[in-house]
Image 1 (cartoon, helix red, strand yellow):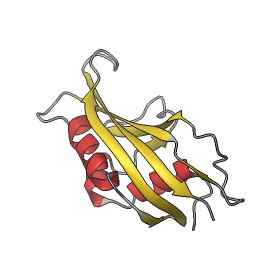
Image 2: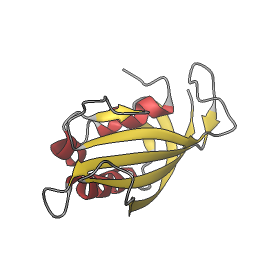
Image 3: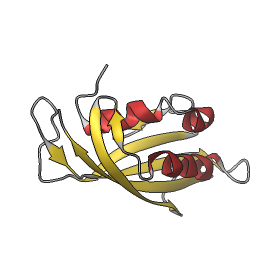
Length: 137
């Protein structure tokens, strides 16, 4: 099944990668996690959309900026948020080719960065940013 949106393609691809799912299982969410989400988990957000449509029902392209927010508790060192953030960076850095039916020219990735004071007490939050250069169908 091919993705219709770039967000969907990124999440579906992340869920095929053992380096990521071995840490968070299938807990990769779009926009926000479920209120009672078990940790660790990852949330993908569109931080800065491109000027072009992101609907692949037409021939479109773009270069939106996404943020992967990785959340875990502090029960081990290194924590799972840190580990999954590094796995995401490694998996998506310079990725190109067909991903879930969408042609990705390349992905520029930065991070991970720890964001102190953002999560609930006892949580660790790390982010990775991905600027995705893609073309539609």
